Length: 128
Image (cartoon, rainbow, N blue to C red; front, side):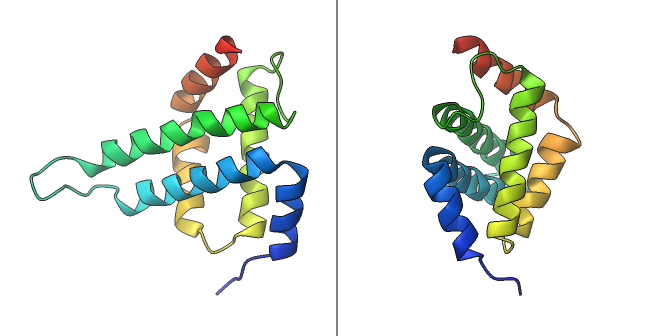
């Protein structure tokens, strides 16, 4: 089983602390979405939608953190913001390789079907 690369994790935290912390929460939300995909609660409520909403709720703070750390700015377009998000997730993959379910959820939600991410990113960028 792969192990955490603590030296890279520390470098990410020092270099862009807001992004690092927001990405940790975003990755955990992605893992929750993956683990609850297709599940229903005891009362029959769809858990997929609930956890997908939580994941998207963590995406906005991740964008805000990247803005605070200077990774994206108010002149960034949606594609640039998503590209920077991909880069940050790629860094998290190297630092924390044991969250494979989160990264597969990210690929499914953001790379294979990027329209929802574009909508959220464009809302955030237009509010800056």
